[in-house]
Image (cartoon, rainbow, N blue to C red; front, side, top):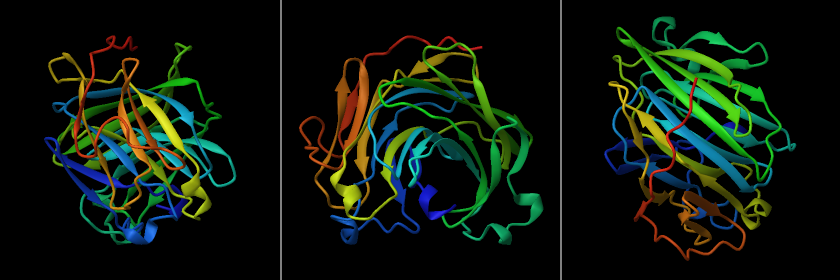
Length: 280
């Protein structure tokens, strides 16, 4: 994946968070250079669908707001270095390689379908896989709905992503990718904010977003609210981070004048279940 579009890959076992930082190397060298990456890891069962909402409250160029992250991929929105805004949906190949050309065709993520306006390709350097982009001029202060669904087909799983403004009813599909993963559904659900600009100035600018209500749908069709989350961060030692629950939603904040006045790092946040999503 290109350096300006490289989020942190997250793997969950229950509520245990393992953060892999393959190229960003989020250590003390990033203090003062970049905002600290902050995450919400949700307590959730394996699911056939992952629904989440986001309202970006403060943004800056070089920011990725991951909305629906899971063990096999991630889905969210970005403000790029030139101010352009996109939605991004990516799914990993099996294995831990970083060179996309090293993966045999039989083991690569396969594109099943996409919206005509969506750009697709391969990525590397953080694992490898398939990636899709949709130009979407999302606005600060507006709420957007995100949905990832899964369909197991033998030893592969099809993951599909769609986006919809909260004040609209028509969902916009991005893409459907098939990955060789032993036939696993959606699991390990999370969200995060990442600063990928990393030029010192970016560390002085706050990023903040509200998440929720979030839900997952189990294989038997039952909707389970994402009412418990753990607040975590990468190894950047910056203290300008915060998270919590306000107005019935989670929030994440990082950078600028942010202070950790709500939830201590590595602690859990409880949220009252919101409304069950009305989906097509």
